[in-house]
Image (cartoon, one colour):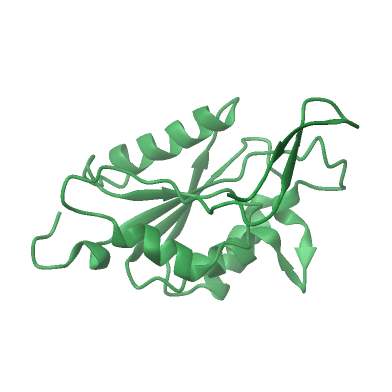
Length: 172
């Protein structure tokens, strides 16, 4: 890691797990490829992180059977010309997909193993830039990782089944 930069300025990679097929959603294509205001959900997600000056590159981790990725990959090169966007294949589960992505960055992109890497789901485009920047600001002084979380603002219901709430989380 560079000692000439503050921890908030150090380069960071983004791994986007995008190998889900959207079974639960029953859409015509996986969620990350659905269009919202003429862009895919994945494009919206990338655009949130593209605003970060520390962004070294984006690794999209896709399924080997993904028929939508090749076309979108070409589009992304024009949409985000100043950002290195690369891809590799995921695994059977989300954890395997993330592990494959991290392994790819270390082995193929040769990033140092102690580099900061953000992992953010392809189908979650509503993350706020300020929240990402706050997370990046904690780097340094022995901090080896972080999870972006937001306090519950209202009452939230939890359900074990489909139609019955069995637990209520109330705002403190």
